[in-house]
Length: 378
Image (tube, rainbow, N blue to C red; front, side):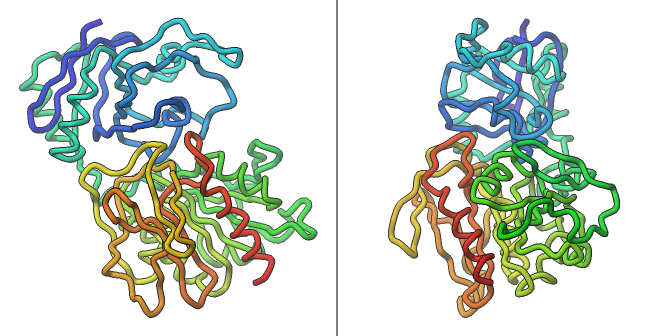
């Protein structure tokens, strides 16, 4: 089925739908991962975005019920060069097309993804509309320019869990709606550190990794305040990844400010930006962001280079951080942007990339052990 993608600057790409008729709009970004499309599709950090994959063939191993990073598909649309309609993998339960269509998400193929990626690299991430019914480039351009920009939008509240839940053996176990929880929520705490994870758009594999290193984990909504968290008597606080601009997430920044020095804190992705804001820094939007499973990051503490999984469009401004209180621990070797920070005196650190991978390498999995050890020695 014929479709057309038009960016806000008027650049138009012909393509065809492999999920039936439909329309989608949002910011167009690209991901350089070769595999892991199901994890990409279900990553809440992609809320409000249409994702194009630079690797040309997608769908060849199908989808399954295990490789999800949230309860639903989060991308606005999925744009690929070539769709493989006949998956071959022993874990596959259905095709990518059936998976997308089942949740009402448009998927298109036949798109010149190389040209689209180069255009975004030159011009930056752009708003766009894709449609199988409206094929008029001028109409699509007008509609693309009417889409709200992501700067200034609070998307974290939209993707966050509505209710707190315990992560139990690889799956959510729902708790009461009342956020004034107490230490009774911890099932097997004992010598196991207890972690409250604030869900700004949390990927399930983060909870799996915290559980793997021996932590008890309870996930709470993004707007949970400091008093409710302290009432739970946790050993540590985790700040999750999430979509969009961190500056409108003022409630999260306020909570972190109140808990600095009271609990060990570890943040990932949006959690890194929120910690940076809580420490007095600023954030800014990157031209086209970092999205893929092959981003080189240098650990300035050890001197080692880690190949990392990333998905973010904003970054912490290095010059805005007070060097007397905050140390930059990691930098991106492609553009020297901040990839990790830590407080020099308080037990708080964060990274911009995804040590839990899914998809991607496991070079940075040690950070979960580091957080566990920090809680045990607090």
